[in-house]
Image (cartoon, rainbow, N blue to C red; front, side, top):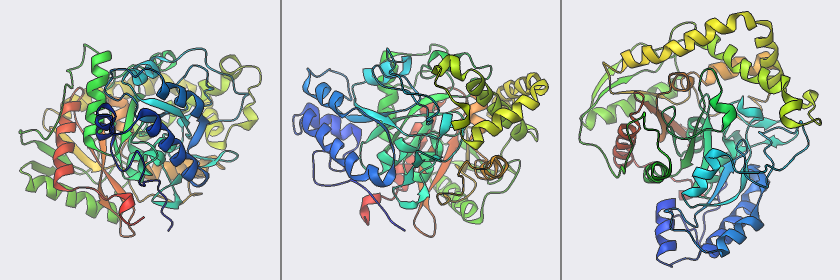
Length: 469
């Protein structure tokens, strides 16, 4: 077991993004000094972790030297995930199936994210098109977990998760279409909130999806950084259809009704995960919340097959519009077996797609009914421990799909319903790996989850990678 991190005695220290922004505003550290420290940290660990998709160090240096903005995170180093457009940088989406070409303008989310002030050092690596829960590209290589470099960093926001956990930057962009904020948060021992549908803007191609499963967000090391990001983002862009999050700065006073499930529609989670989930439920009871155990994750029997067919529809769109979207250099033979297998699966079952979309859309009503009884739902983020690199390699479609279904049993529900869900590193496995616990709530109840996260963070502070590193 090899642990790797970049924490040290430099301008970044072990500060979270909030503390770093305060230090920059107080002139205790300089913006240029901070960026240079983050560049040095990236160069130190990336040869091992492989989290970097595109290097924009000179642009970061130029921005650090420019007149600072008044935005809250001004000068805080960060990364964007390689599936949003950044002007002057290629968007490769975790693939190498076409020749890189630079985006002409920032995407809508990029504009918002950089508007909160951070200085981007470039883009982070991801699984191909975000379809896998592990980034293990056959040519680009695997993204490794800083807690144990023999294990996956999770995906699709793998590079962001590995870099935040390893101390390269305190905050990084991630997005989530089936768990891709929460999965790397769980694997890497950090905080990942998938917000309510519509909480943050999406680029145009994602807004056109018949079921809006994707949400942008961030990965951080502290609850307060996640809360601060949503507060600052809301000052720039707000969806009037959702209750505002506002400035959440600590635990809430309300005692909640919380359901606990350790099983999904397909399987019970592994024995260690079950024990750790029940221990987390016990902490919630100690804090005064009313906890009730339910049989399994509240989804219908058809959910897994429906989600896979819809997931495959997204692959079909990427593959069959590849030349139009990515240019004439697009070569489908360079796509991995998971992408091509998903495309084939949906291509053979297109007649089922209208019914699948109808059933997935109906999940919002089911969820609303569930949250008439409960305020929140606790499950493990993943159904088993973080696997070793190679276990989820996309080399044979049916094998990797079976393994993904087995591991990613809990997170896709909130992508379909649009409900918010947060993964917190509240537990550790017997061999010292972080284990994520997931809390979900009704649509729009993001603030409630942040309050609950603050309370759990205070009651059970999570392990720090640098403690023994």
